[in-house]
Image 1: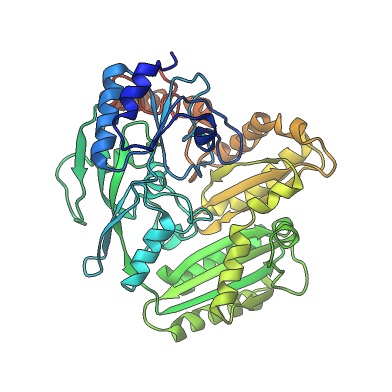
Image 2: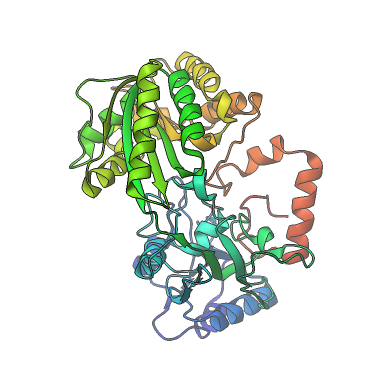
Length: 474
Protein backbone atom coordinates (compact mmCIF):
# COMPACT_ATOMS: atom_id res chain seq x y z
CA UNK A 1 0.00 0.00 0.00
CA UNK A 2 1.19 3.58 -0.61
CA UNK A 3 2.71 5.27 2.44
CA UNK A 4 0.42 7.50 4.50
CA UNK A 5 1.51 11.02 5.43
CA UNK A 6 2.12 10.17 9.07
CA UNK A 7 4.57 7.43 8.16
CA UNK A 8 6.31 9.66 5.63
CA UNK A 9 6.77 12.20 8.43
CA UNK A 10 8.24 9.55 10.73
CA UNK A 11 10.79 8.53 8.10
CA UNK A 12 11.58 12.14 7.21
CA UNK A 13 12.39 12.94 10.84
CA UNK A 14 15.20 10.36 10.80
CA UNK A 15 17.46 12.44 8.49
CA UNK A 16 18.70 15.99 8.89
CA UNK A 17 16.49 18.80 7.52
CA UNK A 18 16.43 19.17 3.75
CA UNK A 19 17.40 15.56 3.05
CA UNK A 20 13.95 13.99 2.91
CA UNK A 21 12.57 14.64 -0.57
CA UNK A 22 8.83 14.58 -1.18
CA UNK A 23 8.30 17.10 -3.98
CA UNK A 24 7.68 15.47 -7.36
CA UNK A 25 10.41 17.44 -9.12
CA UNK A 26 12.99 16.61 -6.44
CA UNK A 27 12.17 12.90 -6.48
CA UNK A 28 12.08 12.50 -10.29
CA UNK A 29 15.85 11.94 -10.87
CA UNK A 30 15.79 8.93 -8.54
CA UNK A 31 12.91 7.13 -10.26
CA UNK A 32 14.23 6.37 -13.75
CA UNK A 33 16.84 3.78 -14.66
CA UNK A 34 19.89 4.97 -16.58
CA UNK A 35 18.72 3.64 -19.96
CA UNK A 36 15.10 4.62 -19.45
CA UNK A 37 13.84 1.03 -19.39
CA UNK A 38 12.33 1.31 -15.91
CA UNK A 39 10.32 4.14 -14.39
CA UNK A 40 9.23 3.73 -10.79
CA UNK A 41 7.15 5.71 -8.30
CA UNK A 42 7.95 6.67 -4.73
CA UNK A 43 6.54 9.22 -2.30
CA UNK A 44 9.87 9.69 -0.51
CA UNK A 45 13.61 9.77 -1.12
CA UNK A 46 15.80 9.77 1.99
CA UNK A 47 19.43 10.90 1.92
CA UNK A 48 21.02 9.79 5.20
CA UNK A 49 24.29 11.42 6.19
CA UNK A 50 25.50 8.82 8.70
CA UNK A 51 25.47 5.06 9.14
CA UNK A 52 23.33 5.58 12.22
CA UNK A 53 20.69 7.34 10.12
CA UNK A 54 20.65 4.41 7.70
CA UNK A 55 20.22 2.10 10.69
CA UNK A 56 17.29 4.12 12.04
CA UNK A 57 15.58 4.15 8.63
CA UNK A 58 15.83 0.38 8.23
CA UNK A 59 14.71 -0.26 11.79
CA UNK A 60 11.54 1.75 11.13
CA UNK A 61 11.09 0.09 7.74
CA UNK A 62 11.32 -3.33 9.37
CA UNK A 63 8.85 -2.33 12.08
CA UNK A 64 6.32 -0.95 9.58
CA UNK A 65 7.01 -3.45 6.77
CA UNK A 66 7.93 -0.59 4.42
CA UNK A 67 9.85 -1.64 1.28
CA UNK A 68 13.13 0.21 0.70
CA UNK A 69 15.26 0.56 -2.42
CA UNK A 70 18.96 1.41 -1.90
CA UNK A 71 20.48 3.63 -4.58
CA UNK A 72 24.05 4.76 -5.22
CA UNK A 73 24.81 6.72 -8.36
CA UNK A 74 21.77 5.42 -10.28
CA UNK A 75 24.05 4.13 -13.04
CA UNK A 76 22.85 0.51 -12.99
CA UNK A 77 21.72 -1.08 -16.23
CA UNK A 78 19.21 -3.74 -15.13
CA UNK A 79 16.74 -1.74 -13.03
CA UNK A 80 18.10 -2.93 -9.70
CA UNK A 81 18.12 0.60 -8.27
CA UNK A 82 14.64 1.63 -9.45
CA UNK A 83 11.58 1.51 -7.17
CA UNK A 84 8.53 -0.37 -8.28
CA UNK A 85 5.55 1.36 -9.88
CA UNK A 86 3.06 0.81 -7.05
CA UNK A 87 4.27 3.77 -4.99
CA UNK A 88 4.95 1.69 -1.85
CA UNK A 89 8.77 1.81 -1.94
CA UNK A 90 10.96 4.51 -0.43
CA UNK A 91 14.37 5.22 -1.96
CA UNK A 92 17.45 5.46 0.23
CA UNK A 93 20.14 7.40 -1.61
CA UNK A 94 23.71 7.01 -0.34
CA UNK A 95 24.99 10.13 -2.10
CA UNK A 96 25.76 11.90 1.20
CA UNK A 97 27.69 8.91 2.58
CA UNK A 98 30.61 9.75 0.33
CA UNK A 99 33.72 10.01 2.51
CA UNK A 100 37.11 8.46 2.00
CA UNK A 101 37.58 7.35 5.59
CA UNK A 102 41.25 6.36 5.51
CA UNK A 103 44.10 5.39 3.17
CA UNK A 104 46.99 3.14 4.20
CA UNK A 105 49.65 2.89 1.45
CA UNK A 106 51.77 0.53 3.57
CA UNK A 107 49.00 -2.04 3.94
CA UNK A 108 47.66 -1.14 0.47
CA UNK A 109 44.10 -0.58 1.69
CA UNK A 110 41.56 2.23 1.52
CA UNK A 111 38.37 2.51 3.56
CA UNK A 112 35.47 4.34 1.92
CA UNK A 113 31.81 5.03 2.55
CA UNK A 114 29.34 3.08 0.47
CA UNK A 115 28.35 6.28 -1.32
CA UNK A 116 31.90 7.29 -2.24
CA UNK A 117 32.24 8.02 -5.96
CA UNK A 118 34.54 5.60 -7.76
CA UNK A 119 36.61 8.41 -9.34
CA UNK A 120 37.18 9.91 -5.88
CA UNK A 121 38.48 6.55 -4.63
CA UNK A 122 40.82 6.35 -7.63
CA UNK A 123 42.12 9.87 -6.92
CA UNK A 124 42.60 9.18 -3.21
CA UNK A 125 44.73 6.16 -4.09
CA UNK A 126 46.69 8.16 -6.67
CA UNK A 127 47.58 10.82 -4.06
CA UNK A 128 49.57 8.23 -2.09
CA UNK A 129 51.13 6.73 -5.24
CA UNK A 130 48.79 3.76 -5.30
CA UNK A 131 46.27 2.37 -7.79
CA UNK A 132 42.65 1.34 -7.31
CA UNK A 133 42.17 -0.53 -10.58
CA UNK A 134 38.40 -0.66 -11.04
CA UNK A 135 37.62 1.48 -14.10
CA UNK A 136 34.18 2.00 -15.64
CA UNK A 137 32.67 4.39 -18.12
CA UNK A 138 30.45 5.71 -15.30
CA UNK A 139 33.28 6.12 -12.77
CA UNK A 140 32.57 9.84 -12.36
CA UNK A 141 29.12 9.13 -10.90
CA UNK A 142 28.86 5.47 -9.86
CA UNK A 143 29.43 4.70 -6.19
CA UNK A 144 31.33 2.03 -4.30
CA UNK A 145 28.27 0.49 -2.65
CA UNK A 146 26.65 -0.01 -6.04
CA UNK A 147 29.89 -1.34 -7.52
CA UNK A 148 30.02 -3.93 -4.76
CA UNK A 149 26.32 -4.72 -4.89
CA UNK A 150 26.62 -5.61 -8.58
CA UNK A 151 30.12 -7.11 -8.28
CA UNK A 152 31.22 -4.69 -11.01
CA UNK A 153 33.98 -5.72 -13.38
CA UNK A 154 35.18 -3.00 -15.75
CA UNK A 155 38.21 -2.96 -17.97
CA UNK A 156 40.91 -4.31 -15.63
CA UNK A 157 39.36 -7.60 -14.50
CA UNK A 158 41.93 -9.54 -16.51
CA UNK A 159 44.73 -8.47 -14.18
CA UNK A 160 43.04 -7.40 -10.94
CA UNK A 161 39.70 -9.19 -10.77
CA UNK A 162 36.23 -7.74 -10.23
CA UNK A 163 34.94 -6.01 -7.09
CA UNK A 164 34.73 -9.26 -5.16
CA UNK A 165 38.49 -9.63 -5.53
CA UNK A 166 39.10 -5.93 -4.76
CA UNK A 167 37.30 -5.90 -1.40
CA UNK A 168 38.62 -7.13 1.95
CA UNK A 169 35.83 -6.10 4.30
CA UNK A 170 32.40 -4.50 4.54
CA UNK A 171 30.17 -2.51 6.83
CA UNK A 172 26.50 -3.35 6.24
CA UNK A 173 23.23 -2.18 7.75
CA UNK A 174 20.86 -5.13 7.91
CA UNK A 175 17.12 -4.93 7.18
CA UNK A 176 16.46 -4.91 10.94
CA UNK A 177 18.63 -1.81 11.40
CA UNK A 178 21.46 -3.78 12.99
CA UNK A 179 24.95 -2.74 11.87
CA UNK A 180 27.51 -5.39 10.95
CA UNK A 181 31.03 -3.97 11.16
CA UNK A 182 33.15 -6.26 9.03
CA UNK A 183 35.70 -3.62 8.04
CA UNK A 184 38.63 -5.97 8.34
CA UNK A 185 41.75 -5.44 6.25
CA UNK A 186 43.10 -8.96 6.68
CA UNK A 187 44.10 -10.87 3.59
CA UNK A 188 43.81 -14.13 5.51
CA UNK A 189 40.83 -14.69 7.80
CA UNK A 190 39.31 -18.17 7.81
CA UNK A 191 36.92 -17.77 10.74
CA UNK A 192 33.61 -19.21 9.67
CA UNK A 193 31.26 -18.25 6.87
CA UNK A 194 32.39 -15.39 4.63
CA UNK A 195 29.52 -12.97 5.18
CA UNK A 196 31.20 -10.37 2.99
CA UNK A 197 30.69 -12.45 -0.13
CA UNK A 198 26.97 -12.78 0.54
CA UNK A 199 26.47 -9.02 0.27
CA UNK A 200 28.75 -8.51 -2.74
CA UNK A 201 26.60 -9.09 -5.81
CA UNK A 202 23.36 -9.22 -3.80
CA UNK A 203 22.09 -5.98 -5.40
CA UNK A 204 20.83 -4.51 -2.15
CA UNK A 205 18.44 -7.36 -1.41
CA UNK A 206 20.12 -8.42 1.85
CA UNK A 207 21.25 -5.12 3.35
CA UNK A 208 22.83 -1.75 2.57
CA UNK A 209 26.60 -1.52 2.15
CA UNK A 210 27.69 1.62 4.01
CA UNK A 211 31.46 1.08 4.08
CA UNK A 212 34.17 -1.02 2.45
CA UNK A 213 37.84 -1.88 2.80
CA UNK A 214 39.30 -1.84 -0.71
CA UNK A 215 42.58 -3.22 -2.01
CA UNK A 216 45.19 -0.88 -3.47
CA UNK A 217 48.12 -1.75 -5.70
CA UNK A 218 51.48 -0.19 -6.59
CA UNK A 219 51.21 2.14 -9.55
CA UNK A 220 52.77 0.65 -12.70
CA UNK A 221 56.26 1.83 -13.60
CA UNK A 222 55.64 1.04 -17.26
CA UNK A 223 52.42 1.33 -19.23
CA UNK A 224 51.80 0.75 -22.94
CA UNK A 225 48.57 0.83 -24.94
CA UNK A 226 48.35 -0.58 -28.45
CA UNK A 227 45.55 -0.78 -31.01
CA UNK A 228 45.50 -3.42 -33.74
CA UNK A 229 43.25 -4.18 -36.71
CA UNK A 230 42.41 -7.81 -37.49
CA UNK A 231 40.34 -9.79 -39.93
CA UNK A 232 38.36 -11.99 -37.54
CA UNK A 233 37.51 -12.87 -33.96
CA UNK A 234 39.55 -16.04 -34.47
CA UNK A 235 42.60 -13.85 -35.12
CA UNK A 236 41.78 -11.80 -32.01
CA UNK A 237 41.62 -14.92 -29.86
CA UNK A 238 44.90 -16.24 -31.26
CA UNK A 239 46.57 -12.88 -30.61
CA UNK A 240 45.25 -12.87 -27.06
CA UNK A 241 46.77 -16.29 -26.45
CA UNK A 242 50.16 -15.05 -27.64
CA UNK A 243 49.89 -11.82 -25.64
CA UNK A 244 49.00 -13.71 -22.47
CA UNK A 245 52.00 -15.99 -22.95
CA UNK A 246 54.41 -13.11 -23.56
CA UNK A 247 53.09 -10.74 -20.87
CA UNK A 248 51.69 -12.97 -18.14
CA UNK A 249 50.17 -10.85 -15.36
CA UNK A 250 51.44 -7.67 -17.06
CA UNK A 251 48.60 -7.99 -19.60
CA UNK A 252 46.07 -5.73 -17.89
CA UNK A 253 43.57 -5.32 -20.70
CA UNK A 254 42.63 -6.99 -23.97
CA UNK A 255 39.49 -5.43 -25.44
CA UNK A 256 37.63 -6.55 -28.56
CA UNK A 257 35.83 -4.03 -30.81
CA UNK A 258 34.01 -4.32 -34.14
CA UNK A 259 34.33 -1.96 -37.10
CA UNK A 260 30.77 -0.80 -36.50
CA UNK A 261 31.71 0.32 -32.99
CA UNK A 262 34.62 2.37 -34.30
CA UNK A 263 32.32 3.98 -36.86
CA UNK A 264 29.75 4.84 -34.20
CA UNK A 265 32.30 6.43 -31.87
CA UNK A 266 34.07 8.45 -34.56
CA UNK A 267 30.67 9.61 -35.84
CA UNK A 268 29.08 10.61 -32.55
CA UNK A 269 31.71 11.09 -29.82
CA UNK A 270 33.57 14.43 -30.01
CA UNK A 271 37.33 14.13 -30.35
CA UNK A 272 37.38 10.42 -31.22
CA UNK A 273 39.22 9.48 -34.40
CA UNK A 274 40.15 6.21 -36.10
CA UNK A 275 43.70 5.34 -35.01
CA UNK A 276 44.44 3.35 -38.19
CA UNK A 277 44.54 4.50 -41.81
CA UNK A 278 42.32 1.77 -43.24
CA UNK A 279 39.24 -0.08 -41.99
CA UNK A 280 39.37 -3.57 -40.50
CA UNK A 281 36.55 -5.94 -39.49
CA UNK A 282 37.78 -6.22 -35.89
CA UNK A 283 40.11 -4.42 -33.51
CA UNK A 284 41.77 -5.14 -30.19
CA UNK A 285 43.04 -2.70 -27.60
CA UNK A 286 46.05 -4.11 -25.76
CA UNK A 287 47.00 -2.68 -22.36
CA UNK A 288 50.28 -3.71 -20.70
CA UNK A 289 51.41 -2.56 -17.24
CA UNK A 290 54.68 -3.52 -15.57
CA UNK A 291 56.06 -2.83 -12.11
CA UNK A 292 59.78 -2.76 -13.00
CA UNK A 293 60.28 -0.21 -15.79
CA UNK A 294 58.83 1.59 -18.79
CA UNK A 295 61.30 -0.27 -21.00
CA UNK A 296 59.92 -3.66 -20.02
CA UNK A 297 56.37 -2.63 -20.95
CA UNK A 298 57.60 -1.28 -24.29
CA UNK A 299 59.51 -4.50 -24.99
CA UNK A 300 56.45 -6.61 -24.24
CA UNK A 301 54.23 -4.53 -26.51
CA UNK A 302 56.80 -4.74 -29.31
CA UNK A 303 57.02 -8.51 -28.86
CA UNK A 304 53.22 -8.95 -28.98
CA UNK A 305 52.86 -6.86 -32.12
CA UNK A 306 55.84 -8.50 -33.82
CA UNK A 307 54.40 -11.93 -33.07
CA UNK A 308 51.03 -10.79 -34.42
CA UNK A 309 52.48 -9.43 -37.65
CA UNK A 310 54.71 -12.44 -38.30
CA UNK A 311 51.87 -14.90 -37.72
CA UNK A 312 49.53 -12.94 -40.00
CA UNK A 313 47.09 -12.13 -37.21
CA UNK A 314 47.55 -8.34 -37.25
CA UNK A 315 46.79 -6.34 -40.39
CA UNK A 316 47.81 -2.96 -38.96
CA UNK A 317 48.59 -1.52 -35.54
CA UNK A 318 49.47 1.65 -33.66
CA UNK A 319 51.02 2.23 -30.25
CA UNK A 320 50.14 5.27 -28.14
CA UNK A 321 53.15 7.57 -27.83
CA UNK A 322 51.80 9.78 -25.04
CA UNK A 323 49.46 9.70 -22.06
CA UNK A 324 46.94 11.68 -24.09
CA UNK A 325 46.94 9.05 -26.82
CA UNK A 326 46.55 6.24 -24.28
CA UNK A 327 43.58 8.04 -22.80
CA UNK A 328 42.13 8.60 -26.27
CA UNK A 329 42.31 4.92 -27.16
CA UNK A 330 40.57 3.91 -23.95
CA UNK A 331 38.03 6.68 -24.46
CA UNK A 332 37.09 5.16 -27.80
CA UNK A 333 36.51 1.79 -26.19
CA UNK A 334 34.55 3.18 -23.25
CA UNK A 335 32.38 5.31 -25.56
CA UNK A 336 31.01 2.43 -27.61
CA UNK A 337 27.87 2.04 -25.56
CA UNK A 338 26.79 5.72 -25.49
CA UNK A 339 27.76 6.06 -29.16
CA UNK A 340 24.89 3.72 -30.02
CA UNK A 341 22.20 6.06 -28.71
CA UNK A 342 22.21 8.43 -31.73
CA UNK A 343 21.79 5.40 -33.98
CA UNK A 344 18.32 4.66 -32.56
CA UNK A 345 17.11 1.76 -30.48
CA UNK A 346 19.66 -0.60 -28.96
CA UNK A 347 19.00 -4.00 -27.40
CA UNK A 348 21.72 -4.86 -24.88
CA UNK A 349 23.25 -8.10 -23.69
CA UNK A 350 25.89 -8.36 -20.95
CA UNK A 351 27.07 -11.95 -21.34
CA UNK A 352 30.13 -14.07 -20.81
CA UNK A 353 31.30 -17.29 -22.42
CA UNK A 354 34.51 -19.28 -22.00
CA UNK A 355 37.23 -17.30 -23.75
CA UNK A 356 37.99 -20.07 -26.23
CA UNK A 357 34.32 -20.14 -27.30
CA UNK A 358 34.03 -16.44 -28.22
CA UNK A 359 34.48 -16.88 -32.02
CA UNK A 360 31.93 -19.70 -32.16
CA UNK A 361 29.47 -17.73 -30.02
CA UNK A 362 29.89 -14.64 -32.21
CA UNK A 363 29.27 -16.60 -35.41
CA UNK A 364 26.19 -18.40 -34.12
CA UNK A 365 24.71 -15.29 -32.56
CA UNK A 366 25.20 -13.25 -35.73
CA UNK A 367 23.43 -15.86 -37.82
CA UNK A 368 20.52 -16.08 -35.39
CA UNK A 369 19.89 -12.37 -34.78
CA UNK A 370 20.16 -11.40 -38.46
CA UNK A 371 17.69 -14.14 -39.31
CA UNK A 372 15.28 -12.76 -36.72
CA UNK A 373 15.75 -9.10 -37.70
CA UNK A 374 17.23 -8.62 -41.17
CA UNK A 375 19.42 -5.54 -41.28
CA UNK A 376 20.08 -5.48 -37.52
CA UNK A 377 23.46 -3.89 -36.77
CA UNK A 378 25.62 -5.86 -34.36
CA UNK A 379 27.89 -3.84 -32.10
CA UNK A 380 29.53 -6.58 -30.04
CA UNK A 381 32.48 -5.47 -27.95
CA UNK A 382 34.02 -6.16 -24.58
CA UNK A 383 36.63 -7.78 -22.44
CA UNK A 384 37.91 -10.63 -24.58
CA UNK A 385 40.47 -11.59 -21.94
CA UNK A 386 37.79 -12.56 -19.42
CA UNK A 387 35.08 -13.67 -21.87
CA UNK A 388 32.69 -10.77 -21.20
CA UNK A 389 31.01 -9.54 -24.37
CA UNK A 390 28.51 -6.68 -24.55
CA UNK A 391 26.49 -8.09 -27.41
CA UNK A 392 24.50 -5.01 -28.39
CA UNK A 393 22.09 -4.78 -31.29
CA UNK A 394 21.30 -1.48 -32.99
CA UNK A 395 18.11 -1.12 -34.97
CA UNK A 396 18.21 -1.45 -38.77
CA UNK A 397 18.64 1.85 -40.56
CA UNK A 398 15.23 3.47 -41.02
CA UNK A 399 13.43 1.04 -38.70
CA UNK A 400 10.86 2.13 -36.15
CA UNK A 401 12.63 2.49 -32.81
CA UNK A 402 9.80 1.39 -30.54
CA UNK A 403 8.89 -1.58 -32.73
CA UNK A 404 12.53 -2.66 -32.53
CA UNK A 405 12.73 -2.22 -28.75
CA UNK A 406 9.48 -4.17 -28.33
CA UNK A 407 11.46 -7.24 -29.42
CA UNK A 408 13.94 -6.85 -26.52
CA UNK A 409 12.95 -10.01 -24.65
CA UNK A 410 12.66 -12.02 -27.86
CA UNK A 411 16.22 -11.10 -28.83
CA UNK A 412 17.44 -11.69 -25.29
CA UNK A 413 16.01 -15.18 -25.52
CA UNK A 414 17.84 -15.88 -28.78
CA UNK A 415 21.21 -14.56 -27.61
CA UNK A 416 21.00 -15.99 -24.12
CA UNK A 417 20.09 -19.40 -25.49
CA UNK A 418 23.30 -19.44 -27.51
CA UNK A 419 25.25 -18.19 -24.49
CA UNK A 420 23.94 -21.04 -22.35
CA UNK A 421 24.72 -23.56 -25.09
CA UNK A 422 28.34 -22.47 -24.85
CA UNK A 423 28.42 -22.76 -21.06
CA UNK A 424 28.20 -19.01 -20.48
CA UNK A 425 26.37 -16.56 -18.23
CA UNK A 426 23.50 -14.20 -19.07
CA UNK A 427 24.91 -11.57 -16.69
CA UNK A 428 28.62 -10.96 -16.62
CA UNK A 429 28.93 -7.67 -14.73
CA UNK A 430 25.66 -5.73 -14.80
CA UNK A 431 23.68 -7.90 -12.39
CA UNK A 432 20.13 -9.30 -12.50
CA UNK A 433 17.91 -6.51 -11.14
CA UNK A 434 14.46 -6.51 -12.71
CA UNK A 435 15.59 -7.06 -16.28
CA UNK A 436 16.80 -10.66 -15.89
CA UNK A 437 14.96 -11.72 -12.73
CA UNK A 438 12.37 -13.95 -14.37
CA UNK A 439 14.92 -15.50 -16.71
CA UNK A 440 17.24 -16.27 -13.79
CA UNK A 441 14.53 -18.40 -12.23
CA UNK A 442 14.36 -20.56 -15.37
CA UNK A 443 18.07 -21.13 -15.97
CA UNK A 444 19.45 -21.81 -12.48
CA UNK A 445 18.92 -25.17 -10.85
CA UNK A 446 15.87 -25.32 -8.56
CA UNK A 447 18.15 -26.03 -5.60
CA UNK A 448 20.12 -22.85 -6.39
CA UNK A 449 17.00 -20.70 -6.47
CA UNK A 450 15.79 -22.37 -3.29
CA UNK A 451 19.09 -21.66 -1.52
CA UNK A 452 18.94 -18.02 -2.62
CA UNK A 453 15.43 -17.74 -1.22
CA UNK A 454 16.54 -19.29 2.07
CA UNK A 455 19.34 -16.75 2.36
CA UNK A 456 16.96 -13.91 1.53
CA UNK A 457 14.46 -15.20 4.11
CA UNK A 458 17.14 -15.46 6.79
CA UNK A 459 18.45 -11.91 6.28
CA UNK A 460 15.19 -10.21 5.32
CA UNK A 461 12.21 -12.12 6.72
CA UNK A 462 9.92 -9.10 6.24
CA UNK A 463 10.86 -8.90 2.56
CA UNK A 464 11.51 -5.15 2.66
CA UNK A 465 14.94 -4.98 1.01
CA UNK A 466 14.80 -4.07 -2.67
CA UNK A 467 11.79 -6.31 -3.34
CA UNK A 468 11.30 -7.92 -6.75
CA UNK A 469 14.99 -7.56 -7.61
CA UNK A 470 17.04 -10.72 -8.36
CA UNK A 471 14.26 -12.88 -6.88
CA UNK A 472 10.50 -12.44 -7.13
CA UNK A 473 9.12 -11.10 -3.85
CA UNK A 474 6.96 -13.49 -1.89
